[in-house]
Image: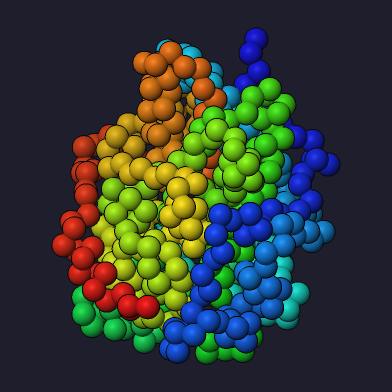
Length: 450
């Protein structure tokens, strides 16, 4: 019998996060103040983040110790398993070996608690009473709700309205853990009211929800803001995924030739691939592939520019691939991938060709997800299914070329609360959507020239 599952003992869970900022091919450009456009100092970020997270955001130290209280919380579900998709390999008749790191075993069903727990811990340590945030598909909102409940913090979540309506069970999960959940755009903030004045039927976007959450946080000295992707400290916390995966691939006697992750803001993607970047920089022959929806093609059709992280221009300006902060995505079912910008760390690696990116429309992604569910027994989140589609395509290419490569992708979450999306697909109600170039051009016209 071939081994399908590779599990680390709990006492071998990594004790430090890996900071890819120590090993970049070029220095990162600093984030800029939204008003002055001058480089940010720690005092500029203090109204929204606790100081220890600010220090991690700007750190170039290669290793940052994971606090004991965070390790204790992680131990509820970590280390997560690594699987070899033997049934899928046989179905595809490929000589490739397909491995996946499965993050859907966490309490919230995705990779998001890896950073939510850490952020809640540092906020609690700093004396914060409440955290505000945004969420797209709801995975991040659920994760932060779980983490705030763990550390005794209040939590307020602005959920993108299209997902609030599409995914009610994620809203219920957040409320179960004690969070207040608001559909965004809302009438509770100036940012929300401005959007509703322009379009009372707006489905919202992550950029809008971020504006609302940041605005709410800065009004109260006992409240801070938490972000589920994009920022350096968020991707830092996620590297526990790749650090575990490296050990588990050693257990499997295989090193990945191709690394794949879906990419919205970059957190699960960076979490898997960053620990492998030093090997790539040292000359190891690895392909690193980010997969995004054709409806929100940040890397494949975006521009490497300074831009705001939100619609209302409240956040710092970051050098990143962007579709423009006023970008309004369509209501595709991969709600966690509907962000206009990409992590500055991921963007820099892409700009320097350390990695590559591809995009898919949603129909072939759901087709791949159903094939995977039938062969491997796990219903994947629509976001994660983009990585599955790419892994299948790479495995088919191996079949056609006769090359037996090792493929590793991150299955960043399960789809047990996304069954309405699958119903829509199976009922023929989903359509492919490619974002029109004129809409991207219009949004980019609002990006400041720096």
